[in-house]
Length: 183
Image (tube, rainbow, N blue to C red):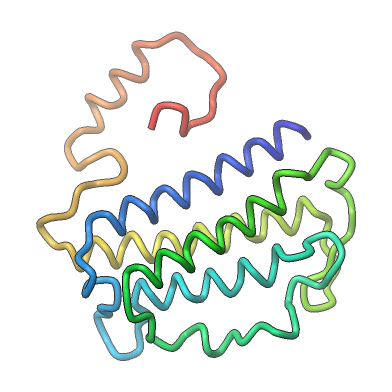
C-alpha cells in the first residue's frame, strides 16, 4: 500500500504537469476562450478544480469533503481575469492536495472519510479525485489544443511517432518503473 500512495502522488503530479504544459503553450486570452456559449473555458475549469481541491483536501481526514463554505455554482462563472489569477488558483489547489496526501501513511488508507455524507475509505476518496482531475485536465488539454490550433505541441506521443516511440521503449530490458519516470 505504500506503493499505492506513491503511485497516486505521481499520478496527481502527472496531471498537474499536463495542465502546466498546456498553459505554457497558450496566450493569455486563450485561457478564457470557449468554443461555444455552453462550454467551459480553461479558466473556468481551473476555477472549478480549485474549489473542488480546497473543499476535498482541507482537513481531509477529519471533515466532510464538501465544505459548507464552498460555492460550487460560482466556480462555473467565466471570470478569471488574468493568467496570474489562473495560476494562483491552479497552484493553490494542487498545494492543498499535496499537503493533504504527503503525510498519509498506510494506516490511513482504510480510514473512513465522507463526501456529502457518503462514506469512502481514503483509497476510494483518492481514486475518486484522481479520476475527477484526470477528466478535467483532459478537458483543459483538449481546449488548449483547440485554442492553439497549428501551434500546439503534443503532450504525448505525436501523431506518426508511435513506431519510433515503441521501438525505443522495447529496446530496454523489462523493468519496474512509473510510466512518468521518463517524461
